[in-house]
Image (tube, rainbow, N blue to C red; front, side, top):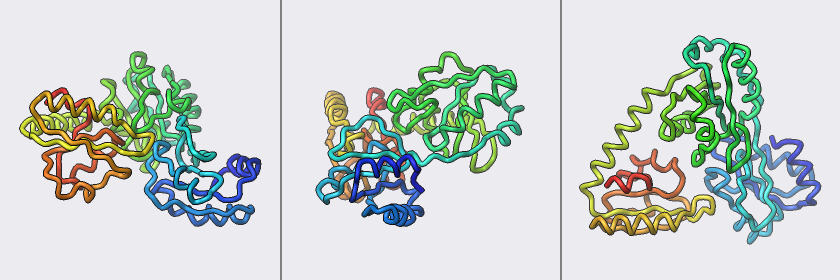
Length: 309
């Protein structure tokens, strides 16, 4: 359910018609949220388009359909200007990590200085974990995310909360559920990344995963050196729109004797480029897309890989 704080904001704004955006993992709550809002005097509807983050806002659709407010659930505002008022409900989960952290302290024995990280849902777990670690003799570092200002928060496209303290720590400890964020961090740091998995109640060292990710990445780059025709993927989602990056990549590839084509769409899916005779793709949109290479049936490279072709 949405927070009392969010409800009071909606009442203060005197909103009548609300369009709700909610990530796939919370869609099971969607009808309950509509029912709750209707009981409190609002008209509400759900945007059923996939929602990947605060980079992916449906405010334009909300405006032309006559909604007063966009209610964006599960993500943090990072400053995108919207066409109608937008309220962000972070959908916080009050999880106490004390039990599983104390159970796994022995696995942290060799690390003296630890950087704590999480996603927005578990931001309240940071302070609890910090106290437990400090009581066990650790020095703990927590830094703000530059986009959101939230302590310890990392996004799939922004690891500034980690990079800002990297030189001070022996390792990073990610608190939460799901492997996307901690494995993404592996590609941004040389420090060890450990994952305190709230869902499975265990602590995992992801160092072995880093080696596998790097091998796969370098294999893709080596294979792509043989290719001639590249599609450069650009999303029109305002938080992902990197047309200038795409234009630079196109020029760089053409200087290497390659053919390069900029392909623009909202949600990037395989069927939209079906039939195009492309050898490989370069992703300038959400980093999650690179994990979907099997769906596309083609190698997907990141912008930083182009210089190595």
